[in-house]
Image: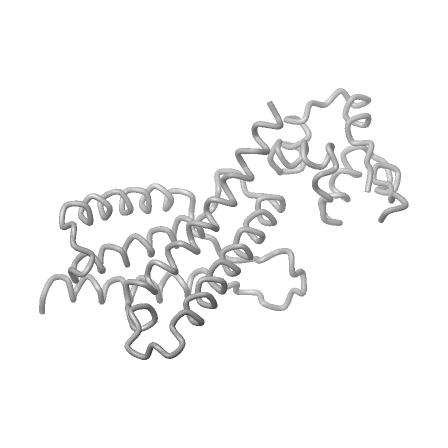
Length: 164
Length: 66
């Protein structure tokens, strides 16, 4: 088996493990503004940053978006962004939980808007370059995660600025 | 909703940092509550009232627009 195929299997296993960990264990609460997700530990942010940078360097080195290896690296970047978004902050409280909740809402809206716009754009174009294309879906997921991250950290930055 | 958190803090001679440590939240959270940008949950409001030894509705008051 090729190394790149093994890496892909590892990514799939990681997604299953990470999703399993993230899901709330006590789903009996109706407190909708509290997600009660089992967020990953703070140190995982550093792991994801290291992964993102090393993958970006590899993508720039290979420099061919249709290459199978580049698509695998983009998948790793998405996984790393996923870890970053769902790992704890240094100080976690209900306020940061609410900002996170809002950032997820914006990410979801972005995903829907992307899917909606390109879905309409591809009507009648059966051999579409968009939805049949794995790279496009990967980028759609990546952009949604980036929107979530940007909203979360921009809000935190604005609050810190106001506090000074 | 308006609140008298800043005044209560001044009476007790507590900084935002002190209060945040007492109720296990970040300083930004206290600042956002004081400036009215964030309405705390019932749990957090009760923690705050416990620190200031006052009922919640003496610290947090409803406005006509609420």
